[in-house]
Length: 185
Image 1 (cartoon, rainbow, N blue to C red):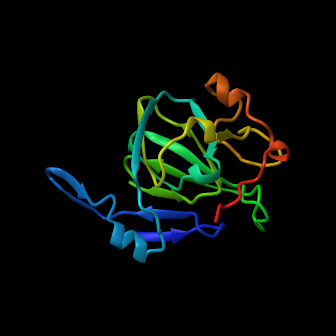
Image 2: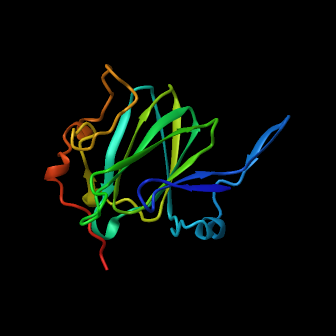
């Protein structure tokens, strides 16, 4: 496996090693000790999966307080454009984002640490998106950020088209109106 740092410290792109032959492929998609050695210090306790149509945008989401989550995300089928936005209080990269195309074919993974809003737009129909979380979901701690806030400057790869969003995602506040994420000691 190869792990690549991004412009924002802590956010990483992971390239698992795929062993391909006439039967298909085999890949180790997670191994705690190897990921820890690569700088991903998270013990995952919950796996989630979604299936979405082309043009669906999910996010930008995070969990607040003691319910914060780090995520290791990947695509099992199809393709997404995945985004992480730094919302950490006092961070020198607050409001900045990094993005990565994840496809079933390229096998990339994206590690998003606690303190980041996360979202993705689906690029192919019937895309299956899977992710590991290092903390269990808590509805009361759920937070969101408006995906198209000009202050974020995210260039979503869907120009001139409308996204399919949940009613909840349409109502998220702008960056200037959120309470920045603060690590609980």
